[in-house]
Image (tube, rainbow, N blue to C red; front, side):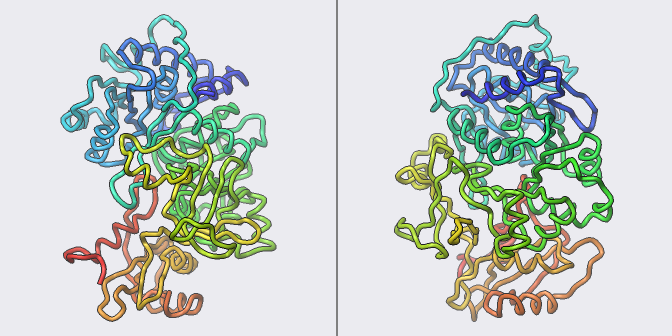
Length: 521
């Protein structure tokens, strides 16, 4: 099935149900209204000369209902949607548009004053179309949706045809264009709804993180079961609590750093979270102690997904709410897991030669199946380096226990070698984050003449909390020993984060290595 056909299935469940709702304005549209708009947007793009399967069209917008309509209209037209994270810098957005050959940009009025700067850096753009309601432009989404209705023509269904291009994580270099085919999206939609079947007749998804990443993938998959999408433009704890209670939210996604902020919010335990069915976390490992705390605050609804854009986006592996509860009661170590391979994913742990290793032994995680990307856009060399014999080499270090649960140890390229010992920052971060005063942290290797690299923790404290370096170091030594424990601790008011809320460990590390010819000693 094509991406847009999953949305049409959701329409068939209840045309009068609210499909999109913007929290800041209260503006809402039914499934029938959104479906009508997608046909009209598709016709506008076809009239603008798009070539199905070839022309790249991007949407530059904060989270909102009109942005979702635009994405679905692109999919219906047969053009290729290029996902743009509106929280990225204008330079990064221009780079992404250029390297993916975007010709048409649908943009929100929030960014109108930056449009000329973007166009100056994007020579391939030939048409920019405003999407906000009330636009007076002759060519706009408003103008397209005001035309007399006509159904958009059907496009041929080729399961391997490109339907979307996303940016890779970018935590180890400049992002590459990750191409999704209809088959990729079909696998993701199936996996989401098998792993998280709605428990109520009317699922409601709260979209907080950018819809161009995990939250959007989750939301698009949930459209197939008729889920209402409630949009927040950004993270605000009070708005999140209000939206959950007011709209009876059943599904939401947040990265661990954002969940830590919610848990640290003074009134978090005063709100009603009983409507929640699935509180989905991913994008980075979560502190085991914070998982325990979240289960106590939000209820037995925590679920985790492991994946990356290149392989099994969203839930290449899945840790269900029932497995969380079982781990809490019977298998405490398992709370550090990210679950088992999902129904459509093959998963292995391999050594440096690509051969599988025994259970409990560490190695690189590789993933296979139709869930994986079609390839990197116009980058055959990088594709061949990442995809080998049908397997995506993730660059993540992990292990699988005897019960089939996957544990992420760290990124392969971020391992600290100190005094000849390998230290994985993620393991140390788990321990530092367990301290009651710590909201978030990054552990990196810093230059040290004796050790080569010394383990350093950079810590963001909870509001009002106080602790000194010696206490953090002693806390870690007691739990993981002197080799893995930080040799030093710094306290920062804020840690650098990516546009999707990941702590940018690389940026923290670069702070301590700048001015050197090499980043090793």
